[in-house]
Every structure is written in structure tokens, then in C-alpha cells.
Amino acid sequence: GEAASKRSEVESAMADLKKSLEGTDSATIKSATEKLAEVSQQLGAALYAASAAQASSGAPKEDGVEDAEIVDENK
Image (cartoon, rainbow, N blue to C red; front, side):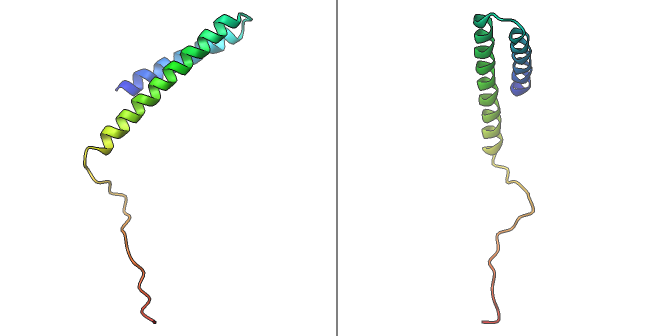
């Protein structure tokens, strides 16, 4: 979904930053760093939205854990 497309944007921005780090132009490095930060934030927002949508679907998670109370019968 949206997170997958954002992931490819992050990977592309990372590649651009790595390439810019091979040079000495600080403006290019700064621009690539800012772009990576921006798309990383967008990826985080997309993951958060997907997580929130899944959590609000109302389906209880079956994780095999049951709430229980310990009763000491020797008292």
C-alpha cells in the first residue's frame, strides 16, 4: 500500500544521500539529508496510519494469552 511506496521513496532518498556524500558540495548534501528526513517522516506517518486502521478494525487479536488470577488453596 502507501507504506510500500513510501519505503521505495526512502530507499531512493538514501541512495541520493550516499551519492551526495561522495562529493564535497555541502548544499547538495544538506538537500539530500532534508529530503531523506521528509520521506522518512512520511513513511512513519503511513505506517502509523496503517497501524491505527488495523487496531480500530475491532477484531480482537488472538495471541493465546488469557487473563487469570492465582489462587493459593493452601491458605
